[in-house]
Length: 625
Image (cartoon, rainbow, N blue to C red; front, side, top):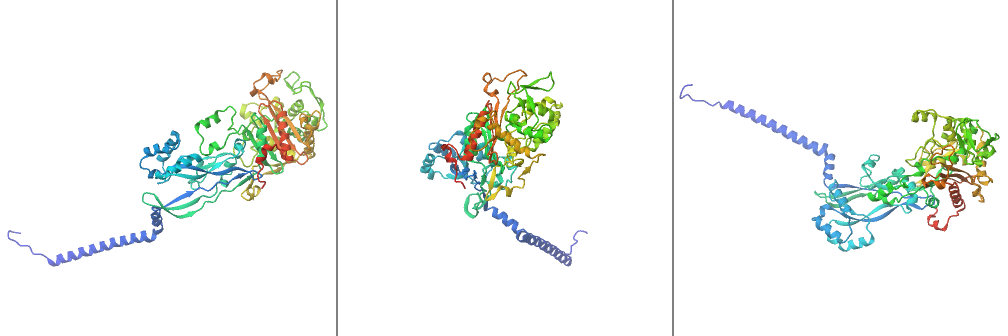
């Protein structure tokens, strides 16, 4: 348009545009309001429970409370594992303004080691709940507690807390049977439910404490605490008390256990006593032992190093894991194997000279009696422990019949129902030797097995368990520790309780072997005739296990050898022989003469059957529940 040309406004068009803009804006506002209302509905109605829970979490803290651990009793009601209160000095870091000043003031009152401060600082730096106290010094003495109580009011955030801790009143004699608890590690949490163990300090590490952890632990409680924005506790809103763990009563007889442990004297060794009617373990001794209380709240590196490096191996459970040649205690079992497989009879006689040869010009396997025993039958071979008889019997049988028969008697298996860590021992076979040494089984290997030497290795528990089969004339009950869990009999709670009957082709052979073992004591040539004179009959068998191999013409001279090279001394026995109430296996490592374990066994028989204990063991009687 040219200069001076004027524009005319189109009011109708502008009005229409404005109306459209208002409508669009109104629609957008309505959409936004709808979205906000929908979101509000979603948050307030649909997600109400979720956000209410989150809101509560901002002001409510859930604190798990570990349950009191169940107690462990012996068969007569004596407490073997107890819970005792201890008092510990704890600090809540959030309530402390000056740690350096507090440290000086506390050290002026108590003897607090640098290690205790280091441990405290490590826990302080690790993740924990706000206002959660940290232990500085454990197990305060009465004197320390009294000193603290005078000045405790001055220190905000410093308190003395009472805690329950595990306590083993009878110490090392029971350590390998009862076991111990210790601080929970990440490895421990991998085998349990971490949620249940929140707040718990201890878990079973060995023995009964380990195997029955689930029953002993109980059900944790829960406290709902109101906290402020900083996490400080304001009040307790709700509390659910924990359920204590189940008490466990064992077959173990505390007096018998302690008496057996003491009777080993200074020797290393093991004693197993079993009730053959039930399989209940009356004593499970491994010597030397250790004080299980050292492990409860964390053993020091120094104390652990002393135990770990000791040449006497106090941490090693000989009863369950000790591998020993069964020596001549195997002979009653070998006699049964020979009878069962048709390689011997009660009537057949054998001339037992002082040695045995597989080949006329071959190696001489010597008898313990240099001059030999003359003509003997199977019964006499047990009574006098004739090595050469079992050399020839084992060679005739070969390893397969021996292996198959001994396997029925629990050799080669852990042989216990409710303790972890038991060894299988070694019950050799032709297949085992081929796999291990890439060699076939030789006749000389069988000869050695005939007297419980060579490749065969058995644990004290296995030998004792096998002996119960003879005592029961063919019936075997799996050895077990627990008698009652809570108020229930063990047998009602365990589906895997094992009882089996071993049937022989001639069942009278059980009784005949028992008779031969009776004559080991009653016969004038019996190897345990020193045990004569009891008001009950004992059936038994001696054994002497070689620690090292002798050359063909080499003689064993104990007085010229180091003590660690002396023979092991073994004995198996049960009494009364006609209706046995107790079976005992005892081994003295490097004990030399089998008289030692035989005498110990007789003492245990007198104690258990006649209540003939020395007076100093009266404190272990228990309330006889």
